[in-house]
Image (cartoon, rainbow, N blue to C red; front, top):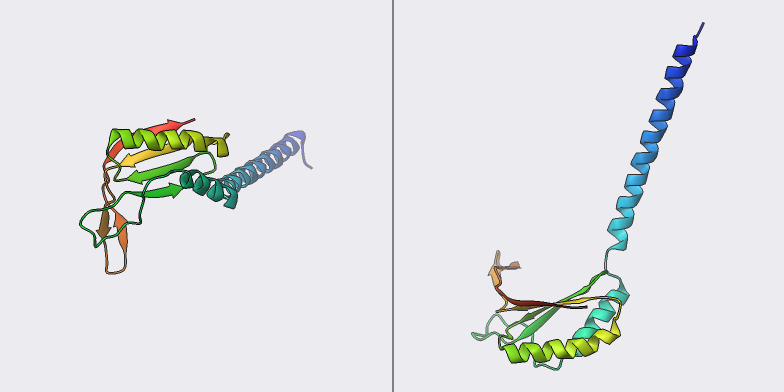
Amino acid sequence: MIDRHQIKNAVTFFAMSFLLMISILAICVALATWIFSYKPSTKDDHEAHLVSADIHYPFRPYDKESPHHPPSIYVEPGVNRTVLNIYGVLDKHEQEAILHQLGSAKQLVPDKPIRVIFMEKEVWTQVTESLRTRGDEKVVRTENIE
C-alpha cells in the first residue's frame, strides 16, 4: 500500500519536473524571439539608406588599386540604431558639416539614434586569393545623434 509520504514525493517530483520543462520552454521561446526580432528589417535597411543619402559629400566605393583611398561610407542598419562608418573624412570642419546634415536627416527616423564613426581609412587584409577581411581601423571620432 502507498502511504502519504510516497504520494507527496511523487506529486512534488511531478510538479518540479513540470516547472523545469516550462522554464526551459520559456527560455527557448525568449531566445528565439531575441534572435529573430533583432535582425534588421527591410524597413530598418531603407531608413538607414535614406539617412545616408542625405549626406552631400563625394563618397566613392573603396578601390584597393588606388594609392589614395577616397572618402567612403558604410551603412549598418539596426533595430535600435543606425551606424554610419565614414572613412577618409579627417578635416574637423568637413566632419561638422556631415554631422549637421545628419542632424537634419534625423527627422526621417526620429525614434532611432544615429551613431557616426569617423575612421581614418579602410583597411583590408588579404586572407586568401578570394577572401579579404577588415584590418585594424583607426577611429578618429565618434558621435551620437539622438
